[in-house]
Length: 183
Image 1 (spheres, rainbow, N blue to C red):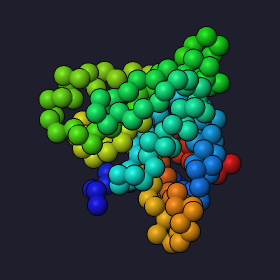
Image 2 (image 1 turned 180 degrees about the horizontal axis):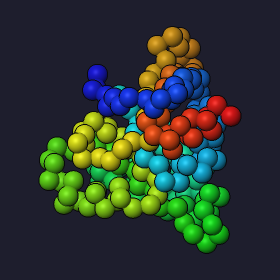
Image 3 (image 1 turned 30 degrees about the horizontal axis):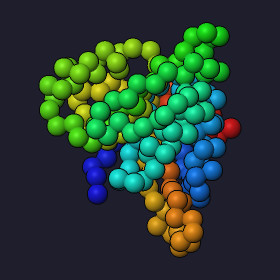
Image 4 (image 1 turned 60 degrees about the vertical axis):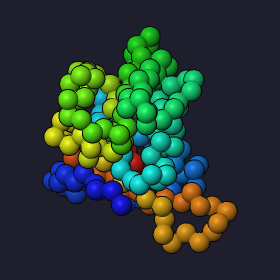
């Protein structure tokens, strides 16, 4: 079991609980987030064990934001950049920059500076971070944390993709994302 990054929710609740019974529900959740303007410059932490569905969620979110082409996991590269040319949240002709980080193999704090992560996190755009606890102390504020876990009550072997999800807002931008989920 992995260690999770914990940050206090903002005042006024800041937590959403839900269930994705199948991948279509994951896609619908991603589409709701993609429709919220706050996502364009947010930092989302994605937590869950290996195989929990973090990268599947990212793929659906990136597609909903207008990313075309192959979307691969950054497990070995640590970061995969994406550009959403047709993102409905951006002015016409302006692309949304997105960085998908996977710090699973992150072990050397010097790598943070050497790889230019400080500059990437300081630039405009969406940052999606898997295994954020491995970069604790280096990352800037997280707007929204998504905890994704297999549903332990699921007994249907034909639908083993069921997930329990908790979204926790840590900033006003994160709270706006939660409001989009409730809407």
